[in-house]
Amino acid sequence: MKFKNQIIWITGASSGIGWHLAKAFAREGATLAVSARRIELLEALVKEIEQEKGHAKAYYCDVMEEASIETCVNEIIKDFGKIDVAIANAGCGVMGKIEKLSAADWDRQLRINVTGLALTARYALPELRKTKGRLSLIGSVAAFVPNPNIGAYGASKAAVHSIGETLQSELRGSGVSCTTIHPGFVDSNITRIDNKGAFHPDANDPRPANLMWPTDKAAKVMLKAIYRRKSMFVFTGHGKVIYAISRIFPAALRSMMAKMNR
Image (cartoon, rainbow, N blue to C red; front, side, top):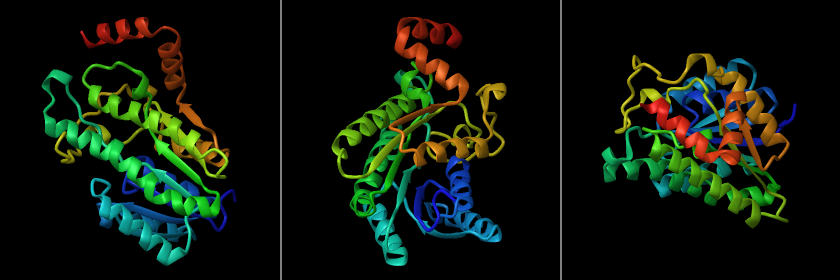
């Protein structure tokens, strides 16, 4: 029971990685404060956790609105008195070649994945300092891959990586750890949500199915990385390979991605 009696706040918990992280932490004895915009899905998650004898509560939070993040944190503290772990998981993917993306596309991508994540950290950190807790930022291997058609998403996740490294310096000596996690391909709905935020349940996922990790498996290894207070954690197997190539042979990786695009 690695997180027994600890309060875990997860943003973007209404589906995908956030949903399965909540269930994984609940099995380790934690009480979950799960937040997102789709409150009805969060209530379903809370019900599942409670059916497994866990404890959870749902909170509305739109990470595109600073006031919403601040209110969410205040409500969690009012209900539970503390936050031991905060996971900035809410995110989206804007797709398309850079020359085709509008200002609105860039604004949505960066407001959710970068500004929303940074403000989640901002409002969580005063509470995490009190508990000497753990902060986790969810990035992506896309931060290191010059992948055509997901340039905006990759840029946002590169910013997440930079924010994580900066926080690791700023938090040194505070007792608070910052773990930046960069997953490879994990089964989720991210590719079924268009650039305006509309969900298309029947849309095909273009990512290679043979490389896709089940979300519950991903949640388990992410939990371990947060527990061990790792500074950075890259997974899956193919994600580690791509990350290594990006560090050692960046020109070769750019050439490979260009050929794949053609």
